[in-house]
Amino acid sequence: MTKITVKANGPYLVEGADIVDETGASFPVEAGKPIALCRCGASRTKPFCDGSHVAIGFKAAETVATFKAK
Ligand code: FES
Image (cartoon, rainbow, N blue to C red):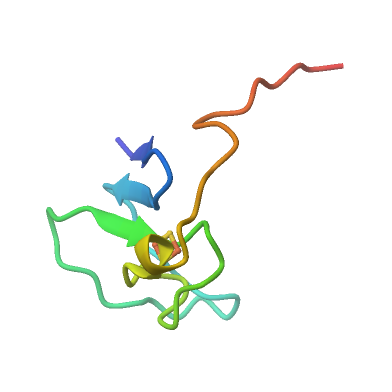
């Protein structure tokens, strides 16, 4: 099962998933370890978090936005 944890003012931690680009090429990930994906836009190693969210003082408006289906 894939699990995505939204970190407060930080990355998305993804567990149990393969990360691929638009061509289907896989990014190397270590089995059994969570992957941190950038959501602040400042990482120099996108799609992965490199800790830059701390340096820029990234503040997310909320951890998980409320979604309402129409
Ligand atoms: S969330 Fe960590 S560098 Fe963007």
